[in-house]
Image 1: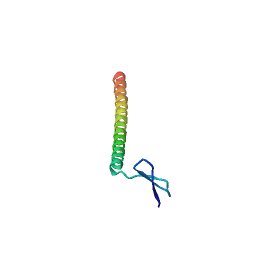
Image 2: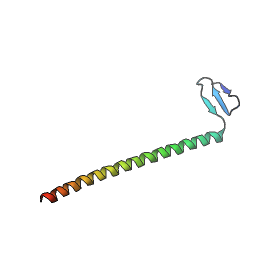
Image 3: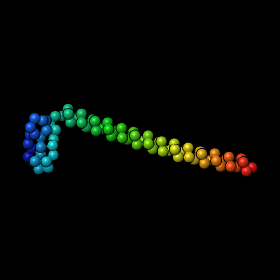
Image 4: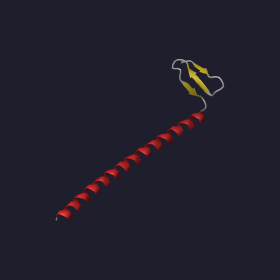
Length: 76
């Protein structure tokens, strides 16, 4: 593996894989923290979407049961 400094930056390039590597630890940690925050936000959004879908299903079931009760009340 050969590493080459990229001009005017804190990055180096691995000439074999052409990957850019950030040599500034604090910038790298800040990036990883942002990635973790975004991942947590996505998980929270998915959780809320799932809960909303469950509520919609429950409301649909309640509506069906109410219709059954109303139909029985008007026929009885």
